Length: 72
Image (cartoon, rainbow, N blue to C red; front, side):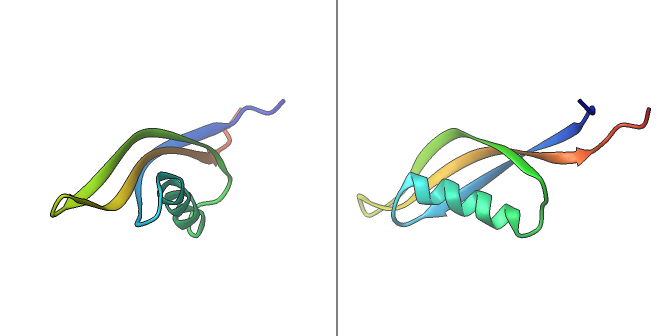
């Protein structure tokens, strides 16, 4: 098996519908400019509240992608 290097970044996705949509938005937006996405881990969930009502769901996501291969 070839050795690989992965980079991990943190993103925050938002949705007016659900935490699942918020996480999906983060990953799908990142996929537009990053290649070889590997693992997404939801690390935190929160809500945006206005006037006592939930107006948005937010998901903090750690996302890894293949960064390159080390030189041997």
